[in-house]
Image: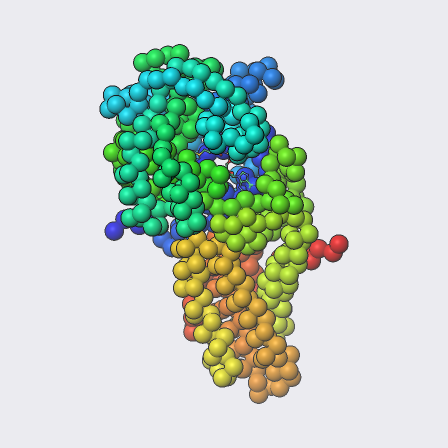
Length: 503
Ligand code: MSP
């Protein structure tokens, strides 16, 4: 059986001001992709940029460059940020890529010829910053329900996608595939608030600006930016191109990871487009919550924006990765503040993880001149400890499969706490005073090193840099995630993994 795993993030609006909230989706996707690779899956992890639309056209005009020049520079900024965050993406799609633009045109023509796209007249309310159309019942006091900014009325000739035709088929699909929309609460919201009240056909072309993909048979129209953007998940794999081997291999996607405000596009518009194209639907769309500051979504327009690179420089990459993965219960909103970041660094990373590694290696170096093997002098107090080590992998895997990432990390850090407690229980410094207990002492340190090795292996997807350091300090190449009877450790000099941060 081909164990493939295709995971995507949304494609980002190119902006000079990516914030830690944007990094959130990408860091989660990166951790999942790494975990799946470690499990032996053939992973395709895709991200990219969503570069068309009126907003970009206006911005470029403001600074006096062409839209393409404008986005080219900013896309570099995105790539630079993902590099700083050590994001292990396999594919980066730009909606200005030739392969994408050509495929979008072919898709548009195909749906038009099939009658699923038709020409009509659009009258309605449009929010330019969000590139979203709203009905009068959706707007709140004349403002966009998503961002709270002014919407304005537009009337124009336009093409429409027949969402209404597929409404019953979509409900049937969602109800018979409980894993399709996750978490469960988002599924109920989509069905009850959006689909069941009745789907209106969606306006999928614009004539009031030109920065977009042209409708090939009616050149004054450009394709609506969401229709253009959503197809990235298949155009990047070569759908409708000369070489669609990746498409055949990876589609349908296993997981579209998206923020909660764009679940609507991914679970209504996108599946209907796929149904119209007679393609299989993604296995899961997971809508995660937001990182908030003082209860508000982080966003450049709200002014609570800080460049994530500042935090990386100040606290280190793995601390940032750990914080966003651990602090936010997946699916819910989570609060970001430097105080809670520092608290996590001190308690979990410096204390729990850092101290355990440092203490264990120091003892190994002091009592056994760096070389440790298993002497198998087992005490009853070891049973529970070794048992926890052997259960860890299946627990973490089960939590990762449900995308309960924070809980998966909690399992590993619980194991580290257990290992610290094991030091207190076995009191190696007392054993060291008695020559007859030497073999028992070596067994204790061996057990600790096994727990450190296994935790480091399981933490690799989350803390790639730190775990490399740990594995380097214990010089061990074994990758089994369970207790090994006949392993051997040749220790290096320990160096602190995380410094405690004093106020
Ligand atoms: N371009 C669209 C996506 C098209 S996908 C076919 C878009 N781009 S975005 O740049 O605005 O957002 C990208 C992702 O960042 C979204 O998943 C969004 O939810 C996420 N986040 C933006 N701010 C966020 C927080 N404050 N917290 C968590 N995630 C947030 O939407």
